[in-house]
Length: 200
Image 1 (cartoon, rainbow, N blue to C red):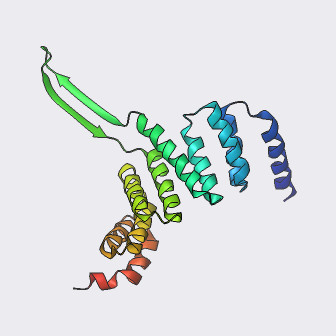
Image 2 (image 1 turned 90 degrees about the horizontal axis):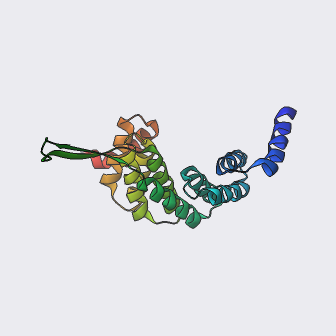
Image 3 (image 1 turned 60 degrees about the vertical axis):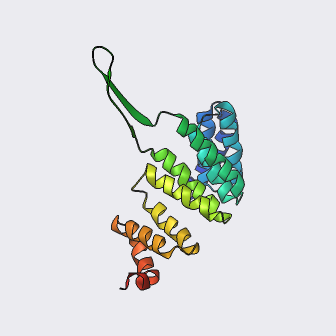
């Protein structure tokens, strides 16, 4: 136990003197976040963002820090900024084929899933749920799922919000999807809340 305490003290000393890049500030903030020092983490993440205003991970972690401090509007702002940065990156594959004379033969575009974008939308949905902005939370969960169809908690939590909004059929559909994909918690919810819907 003493070793753990000593390690924590050493990390704290290191935190205050060594950060000189956004990456270093992010790593220090991550240590503070894991130690539940959300205020300290948020301060270091702000410094990381000052070094690099395009640091997506810093916005996401600062949003999580704000969420844990119950500063939900600031959390939403950070997740929104992360989404804008990620969306500005090339997220689609465009294929254009022409013949020797330059005639367009085929043009197609396919969106690629982006787990980082899914995380930002999911986290923003949590913050929007905390301030009872259910409609926008559902939209964000849906966008998270579009970017990561295997994000089981997004289906489950979207179902919870739909249920609160009296869309019981939609809620049960989400919970069934989560259950089919392997989220055991969804099964219990289906049994408890969806049995009357499933009866003929």
